[in-house]
Length: 192
Ligand SMILES: Cc1cn([C@H]2C[C@H](O)[C@@H](COP(=O)(O)OP(=O)(O)O[C@H]3O[C@H](C)C(=O)[C@H](O)[C@H]3O)O2)c(=O)[nH]c1=O
Image (cartoon, rainbow, N blue to C red; front, side, top):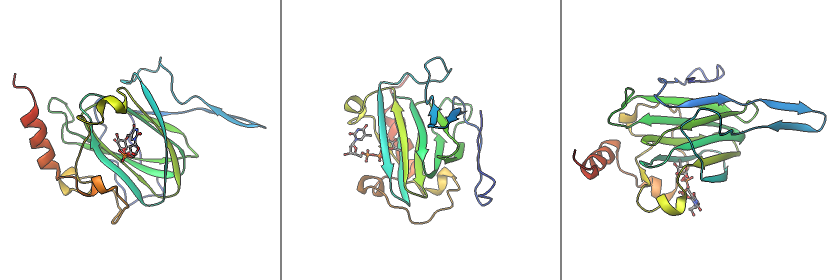
């Protein structure tokens, strides 16, 4: 596992490697025509079996998240631009429970991050950016009942984003604090 912050961003901290998270460097094959890069292979040993791929464009200073899904695993690959990917481990049975990790990504240095269900996740874009996202359960199936969230700037997350006033969706603007989300999930969990 790799947790990376680029040396050009000394104010940021990388956090801790989280159990089950992969950050894979991709190989860009360049020639006189341009380049060719494999962005996903089924034989890579990640947690993800994708059922939906999406392409997302983001404006500068946009923050998407923090979201949490209990049923599906996820993939993120920045194609163009510069962004941060933050993860917080909310899995009750995880060895890295309540820890976080921050990745700084550049479209000029392609990497794919794959992470399992149960991790809060969010992405912040410094510049106009394009990324690929894949999930193991389609939006039409998970959208209504497995699309949880909490405030991106909740101090209890501990994530050192280094940003102050990002552009959020209306929904993300009204997300609850982390402790409320965790209490709701615990109350909804089937008792053993
Ligand atoms: C996720 C999704 C969205 N949409 C539509 C629904 C809205 O009209 C629009 C924007 O959706 P949303 O505001 O949910 O997008 P994000 O806030 O960027 O959410 C995404 O980024 C965060 C960090 C996540 O974890 C979500 O799961 C993820 O997909 O696209 C679709 O048509 N299909 C989809 O799969």
